[in-house]
Length: 509
Image (cartoon, rainbow, N blue to C red):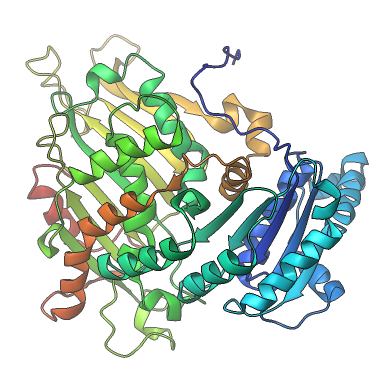
């Protein structure tokens, strides 16, 4: 496809110029090794880290630097075809890995140890930051650590690790609390040590290519805006499916459940981008102002707005309670479907359905906007297998795509009608780019390095998201009459979810 001229108002994260010290808390843990460091290396490989940078891994584990670097090397990738790794491209990858690892060091210390963080900061100044006093050096802290030590880490950074000659930015990972009360405490604890401008709350779903494209599609194309309301849209469905259970994560998962793990954060961000009004600009606060206004219009959920489920054994696949890490009698849902109502002029009366689950029939994350049927149309009596004539589908994963279904006449001597797709597949339209699609963490870390916050969650956003879910979550856990329906491992979920949709006059796609 021919490239258009850049839109002047669009945000852009190019290569940062200012030198930076990147400190990864929890550097010896799985999240840092599997996500943070590979994302940092990919940015380096694509020439998107500043020319002058250093990376310090910080964790409680006592490791020497060589052992730490070796533990990271096996996780790094250039996305080079293994069959061509001996080519020039593969050789360049190996050379860049060595160069990257030469910029990485390790420091052992506690997250609540202000002196250790201060000592680590002094080492950063002595070895690197002294050489760049003229330009100043920013510090980016990435907290790949459990939420129980967020507040301690923020205190140590604020009192012993702030950038002496540049900006300090602190990236924190979900979960951001368990409910409104716990989030409020976390927010207050962080605010005692860091300003809102210094805090970057990361939700990796906002870094996904198709999630970012929602705003471009909505507000960059004139054809959609006149149709984007209750007069033309029948329902909106947001789906998240995983074809595997909680293997290896049962202990963590049973303490959170699918609603906290996926719905309250990832999918709620998608809903906000789909339903919000156009921002005044692509400035971070303008975008997030509109998301907050939308979230304030979402009715607080009750348990009657949910269908909950737990997967049961099927064939050789185990059920949720077959996992030895799952407590006996656990009522934690591995599947949830819910229905939202948005009380504003644009969306009054339009049901927004959301479902997410584990051990389902496929891997899928997508949005389906179902338009109303043609009123009194010439072809209203024609059989389309009960399907809607027009749907706009945004497939977030796998095989990113956007397609619109339309009604067409089948070629031939009959008047038979069928639905066909106007299909934009990323892999066919942008084949070269799709082969090297950046990971969501790469986009978000790059934005953080540039001080761009549009794809990070603001404090009031999270307050509103928790307000929507908290009372229902509390009742799910305290009221034993709220139960989970069984569904077979590998199915599409419990049959009870269909009643939830039918009560709102719609059906699941």
